[in-house]
Length: 129
Image (cartoon, rainbow, N blue to C red; front, side):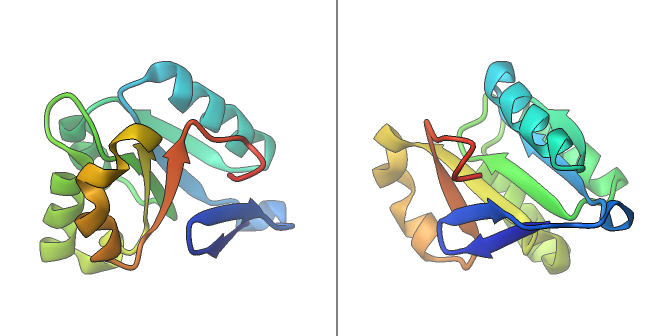
């Protein structure tokens, strides 16, 4: 199971019967693949999406315990995806963990500070995840 604290996510012991499903949304396949491998090693079921539109559809159709969402996507931003669910399905919006590149954090400061969701900075290490 993932243990949440502001800005950091760490692994805790989990039973196989408590296996959770995670959606990773990142336009960079290599980053999504690295996160997927780590989560699968910890016993999580993982799906991936590489665009905001694809993420919207997967989230509407699936059930996820955690949605790891890059804020900068090629079609619609992770911010827009989040706002859609915050307005329409707030229980889903609570499951978002945001990822953003260290160099562009200033562009999203108001957004990050304006919600209670956790975030990760890229590049990062698996220790932080």
